[in-house]
Image (cartoon, rainbow, N blue to C red; front, side, top):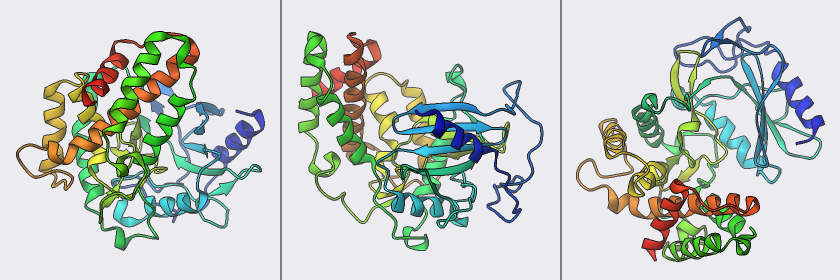
Length: 336
């Protein structure tokens, strides 16, 4: 990422919010309230800008209690503007982390000189990657149930489609452009992934509309999409609305379902997640009994997507897949 963009994000994250009437976080201070000293996992919040993520699909810079994000260069800015207004809507308070307002025509979105959207957010404490036993699976499930219960017709619109299938198709395209032929085991893995992809219906491959009418969905649920806000001990909230939209709600349960089916998530953890979702009234699956009629296609799609990305990342490094990546490829092979 260019140093100029990093500097722009640092300046944006340092910008003081002057309006106390901006979005108010649930059970906490107003988003945009004056910053104060605090700690995260025993360390002081950085007063100088710190790059939290720098990937082709997004760069995130933090200063104190605020982060600024540069979204993907090919991001649909008009659709993102709707998603930001949804995240700030009162019906999503307590479910989605609300964005901070900016001095731009869209209210929550600025444009960098190359056209890519820039946004501002309150900082939240992420899930600790080194403590899997404390992973908030039940909280994630309850948040999804709350999200799926929101009527899209009551939100700012037009609400765009959920982007899960589009991301799956993009993962396949990335794998297809990777130099897999140089590593025989990766070439075989790519064939297995393609075989799994071919078993999916057209809508799951982003080749046809999703079955309707659909519910409000996150579109890319994983534990990295949860933060505590206000940090360090506020409630868990969902972040990253880039893929938010109306679609098949089973997609939001598909990643843990895929991990469970591939042997990467313990059955007890999957049962807790599914049980919490059902107990909260989640509508993606039937309230009791076998959930797989609703989850089969989304779980297979996420398995293929994740396996394709694993192959795409391994190919430039000239390495074989690790055990977890291989388990996902094996699951793809069983689909075919």
